[in-house]
View (spheres, helix red, strand yellow):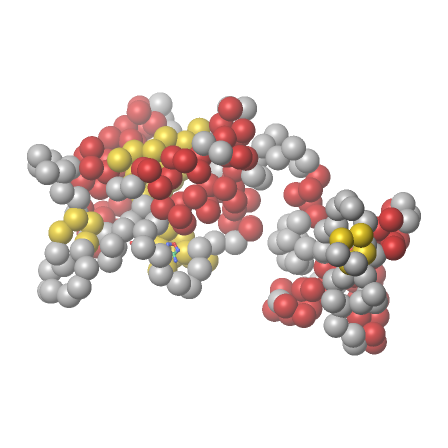
Length: 259
Ligand code: 4FV
């Protein structure tokens, strides 16, 4: 996965790329990320990249020219090699970002170019001329696109085979199929009087698989019933959901809570 990030605040982005999974992915050569400071593409000695909005109003707008110059400059080497760059713009107006979208980004061989907006946003002529693919990470307003850019990179990079130590864990996690995750436990078996569900200590793999499936279905039904709506359920899932409904008890997630 190759990714270029254009931002006014590289210091917000670079440190995250130098830690944990993203750092390992880069060291393994499975992820390439270059961070570009938009100010390097401004024309004036004060490196001004934003200005007051035409028509008045609060806040500042990011100037179009530095963005055009940055995008053209970063695209060129790729286009010289016949590669088309995928230009992404994190914004509240964008298509909702989902696990499925993350898979799509991870599977795309094109280099990604992520433009981070800031302040009130970018000059609309950038959208008109460059037609960036807009992606929203949620219905709330951030101070800038940097955090959203890191969300996109993190969610996609971890899906690249070889990045995560245990690729099999990808198969069972939330939204791998639209179910929320089952509860996880680790040593010690007793914490502040709280124990671990017996079944997980039983070594009985089929019973453990069923217990985890049931918990995932229960949590999904309780917290995100929308994820279960018009979803093709297996016979087993239907049986487990019937059990859950019959039990009708809210699973507290900690032993002694049934489930
Ligand atoms: C955002 C979001 C987001 C809007 C104005 C940056 C900010 C500022 N990006 N999903 N929600 N962006 O709030 O992606 O330019």
